Length: 393
Image 1 (tube, rainbow, N blue to C red):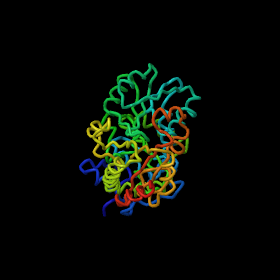
Image 2: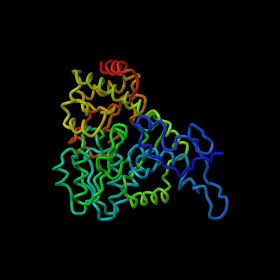
Image 3: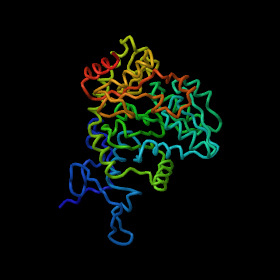
Image 4: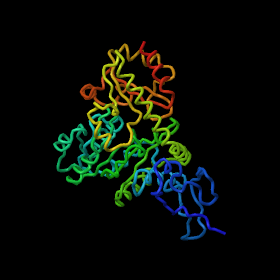
């Protein structure tokens, strides 16, 4: 009788395409029972056969079979050696910034998500870690902003919410020149459309609340380390000590979401192209920020380093009255924070995602009172357009 496959097996499935990898994950099936859906191991602790003999699992804060399947799946998809699943995207970024020491300096995208802005300023600032915000789409500006003690370059690309595009390969090469780590927040595009580790980045982070889960029913975060065992060990110690790991049930929900990642991302991409083109033709819309437009500053870089444009659009309208009309009158489209789910969501960044960003900086970036962000969902594209059109009226 054949013995069951061990949980220790870590097949990277390199012979499969990404749209197969997302379906089958790491182990894919549960090795002891053959369950096609990885079970939810809702157990705090695990029994040992005798002294010095374990199943490989001790305590769920340290490791859990369901969470391990998610972490290994993400390592496969991103092309890294080790993945970690956290209780939120914020918890994931906390772990990454914890790699810095007092006196270190970090460069960040200047229109970075407001929560990341808060972490590096309010939390890590008091520990002697300094930071500078810079337009990562301007490599000369990044080079000029680097300091002798710069140890990390943290990049969003495309950025949230201005949709600026950084050349990951060029930024990573610069980071290596100065002895810094490159960290890329890959939330907007996911490894289905963009693989930062293959372009030179050292670490990838995700708010897996968004596209990876894809159904607006989980708060979670992911970190994947490319090839540095020492960094992986430090993050392992962080998650072990801080207790910020993702729960088994939430891990299972993200695994389930990832199984449809390929088909969802393709539909998000298709719908966003149609909605962005429609928005650009509306008289009340003054500017559309969408990386899929050929006249976007980062279009050629996007074509080079990604296989899709994603589902995110930002745009400005002619007045605050138009903003209020849209947010009050959308029907199928929902006025809510977050992004990346099956439903189309519209967000008002200046008081929601970027509330903690100083007003002067927001205005300088273009995050004004007339600025909106749209996460294009999976509905019929014409229904999305029709709803936005009636809300503008």
